[in-house]
Image 1 (tube, rainbow, N blue to C red):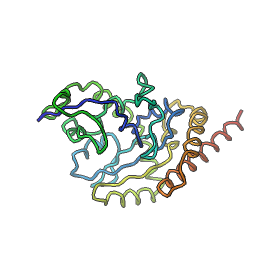
Image 2: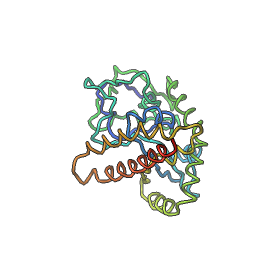
Image 3: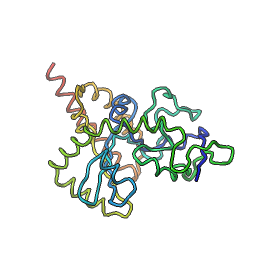
Image 4: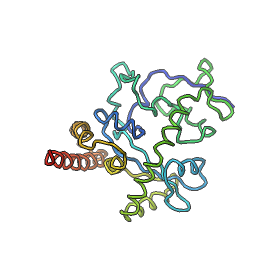
Length: 253
């Protein structure tokens, strides 16, 4: 079995949430509103073992996929997407973008469905597109392997953060248990600062100074509609925490 694929620069994949490595989240704090996504993967799923390796196990039947994200509503385009639908930060774009349409948080043998364009996407999968995937193998896996190494390298930090939160917040564990019972699994979004506190040699005050204006701008751009209420709450919560951090930093000068 082989799959063909070519990007047509339609920009359709550059909307909504974007999973990021910790390093990319820090590098782009001045550009993306940031959060952490916790997703449940049930035992028996193809990605279960890898999810546990890169994340953490909640219980015997559930592994947790935990990743920083650019936290944007589905109708909001990436801030780095130009008017011509081309990436304006191509040379420094996140590893997640470089690996697209493949994903390194899934096994290489489990990528075929990612090459099927979503509704409205204009990806070329016709006979004139190059073969990119054959018999469960990515033909040019350079970016995939690079992203996998990044995810493996940050796993210790992710696991330390997750264990700390799960131990100190029983309500979080209970909510994840409820999410895990959903047929396709569930997910929750949390603030990013608790994760970044686990990063060695990290300047929280500098991060707050770069991220707060982005959250404030994102908040101001939200339409007054019910579907944006959760984004509004999370942006406000994130801003309040960053503001407290900045006030505390000024008090120590």
